[in-house]
Structures are given as structure tokens and as C-alpha cells.
Image (cartoon, rainbow, N blue to C red; front, side, top):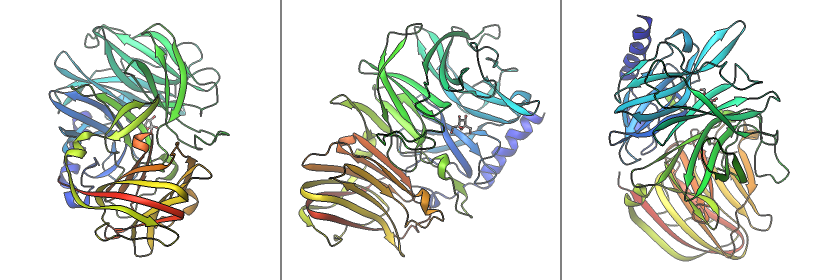
Length: 488
Ligand code: FRU
């Protein structure tokens, strides 16, 4: 009985407190009310893209985790669906943590991490719920208990199943911890996950942290992209590396290599951070029917979660992004559905930017898509301020001599400015800096050099009518610009 009550209560609450559309981003996914973190179960089911997410409807802070639910056909318009899972069983009473979804024999199958109390602490185990795209029935016990791990395991850190199928078998990749306390990725398989007598079989440790990239690895993902294997991880407690590519705290990396398939070793050849902004974590990917690999991330970071006091919702997803290779580099660009929504508002050619900040007629707004090509042969620095107004703004700056990208929100109205600046190595720019900026009321996402470097940040504390944009340079920069409104 409790089961039905907890979920019904969440569904009733969200339907009674739904945030009006004009108080949400124009085209980014957010919860109807309350808090969200990680995207979960990002997948296709019966012709729709489904997005579940870590959800606490009752406040704008993290709390007992539910799974919120929304769907889209074009990655831009989101249709709220009723809360999918609530922490209402003995094995998930402390929360339904992150996980994946897959279409299996016509049903939508969710695998998530159930957190339950044990002695003084908590344990994490993998649980299953089966549904029709709206309503889900939980299996009556965890399908993968925490004891079913190879030697040296942690009962407390065993979570975030990512699902994929191969040759008719369902695979689940999980984050766990080994003897040395570092993160490792565990692969399991099941040929008949709906059969209550089936058992998830351990296949292999796919990757292991040697201590150089954080500790526990959360929210893994695994996919093939044009002949190379990519494993995405979200490591906790990263320490800054000498090359400054990763930042301290919670970070996100793609491990790139080759993998012949289950049971064979994953051979890592490279790794790359996924976002150089302030707000990005725990991404998931899906493959569209037309073969695109589309990533969506939580546009937030545990390192600075400060919900504005009266916000009805807090936590949003990034724009879905297509992943692709360019000259061997893993790149990201906004889904092409956004390109289709663009309507040119204004364009400029050859604008000279020197020491004085430049504003251009018609170049302003908080919901737009903008592309710049800047000749920087005579510039030492180029930058732009956006969301300017009422004494607040945020800034992106490239320091060409130092080779640095700076995302700076210290003037963005937050109350801890020490956390509001991120500085990372700048991707190679050459003579022409290419920059795409997508603004959506409460966020900004940047794509540099055709997607070689992405940077995301939220804009919660800058009023929505602060919509100025200005450009600045040291030395001399010459800029072409196209600014698009979005027909949504
Ligand atoms: C990542 C994470 C996951 C966990 C979830 C809990 O942000 O810590 O590992 O499942 O959030 O909300």
C-alpha cells in the first residue's frame, strides 16, 4: 500500500505545483517542480526519446530520490510525464538512484540503483522496474545484489547501471569500487532479464582507476562511435592535474580506445574532459534511429549547487548534443533539430574589436543561437560578456597567448564568487576563433572550433531581462557574426 501512496503523492504534488512554461527554459529539459540531478534512462521507446532524471519534487534541494520523467521527439520540446519511480520499497527506501532504460520485448525496462539502510550506513544494489512508457512495476527484490561483485568490493558504492544490448543479450555497466578504494567499471549480462529466475552474470572489470582520475567513478556510459569505443565516466574527488585539463571536484571524462566486445579488454588510448564550463556532470548518451550518438548532461555540478531561494525548480539538462570525431578529437555540437529552428535575426561582417567593449545593434537576448568567426591574428585576447544588465553579467574569454579558456560568472549574482571561475587549456585556435553560443534564459552553452571544446554554465542569479551582449579584445580582432532567433 505504501508503494502506491508514495508514488501517488509525488504525482499529485507535481501536477498541483507544475511550473508555468514561461518560467522554465524555452527548450531545455527541467523538472516540472523541485530538484533534479542526473539524466537517467535516456533512450528511445516507441518512437519517443525518453528522459528520466534524479528527482525530488518537494523542494529545490536534493532529497529522497525519485525518477522524474519527460519525453521529446525533437530534443527541444519536452512533454512532462508522471513521476516514474518513488523510493517506496524496502530495498530503495533511501532512494532510487541513477540508471538506464531499454526497450525489451516491447516493454520499457528500467534498471536503477536502490539504496537501503544497513547497520549505520547504506548499501546500493541494482533493481528493476518494467513498464509501458508511463507506469512501472518494480521487481520484488534487487536483481543484482551488492555481494555479486568481484573481490574487494564496496557495498556502498555500487551504482548507476548503463544498459546496452549486443547479440540479443542485455548488458549493464556499473560504477563500483575495488580494494584500493578507487573506482572501477563492472560489466554484467543477462539474456533473459524479465525471467524472475534469471541471474545477472559478471563478465569483466572493464576499466579501473589507477588513482589518477578521482576516486569513485559515477554514471558510466559505453558506446561505439565510428569504429572507436568511448567510455564516459563522471569521477568524484578529482584533483587538478598538472596539465590543468581536469578540474578539482566532480568532473567528466571520455576514455577513448578499442574494445573487441564482452570478455575482451578495453584498451584505452586517450582520455578527454567533456566540458570546460562550470556546470556539467553525469551525462548519458543514446543512439537515434538515424544513427546519431546524442549526449545529454546534467547542467549543474555538485561543486556549486545553490538554488535561488524561491526557485520552484532547480537543475536542468544540457541541450542534447551530437557526438562526432574531427581529426581524431571527440567533438560535440547541438542536435541538428536546433539548426532547423534558427531564423536569422542579424548578421555582421568584419567588425573590428579593440580595447573598448563593443555592442552591436540587434545583438542581445537570452534565448538565441549565435555564431562567430573571429580573425585573431592580431589579438592577444578575445571575449564576450552576455546576460549583461543591472550590474551583472557572465563572461567567456580566450587568452590566445596563454592558451586558456576562461568561463567567469563572478559577476553573475551568486554569493560565493570563489567558485565562479573556471580556467582550462584552450583547444588549438590558429588564425580563426570559431564560437557558437546558445542561450536559453537560465543557461549558456558554448562550442568552440566546431565543437572541439564545449563549455556550459547556468545563469540563475542574473535577471531574465539582463540581455546585453558585448565583445572585447586585446590587440585587434575582426569578427563575423550571425545571430539567430529560435522558432520553437
Ligand atoms: C551522480 C550521483 C549518482 C547517484 C545519484 C544520486 O550525480 O551521485 O552516482 O546515483 O547522483 O542522486
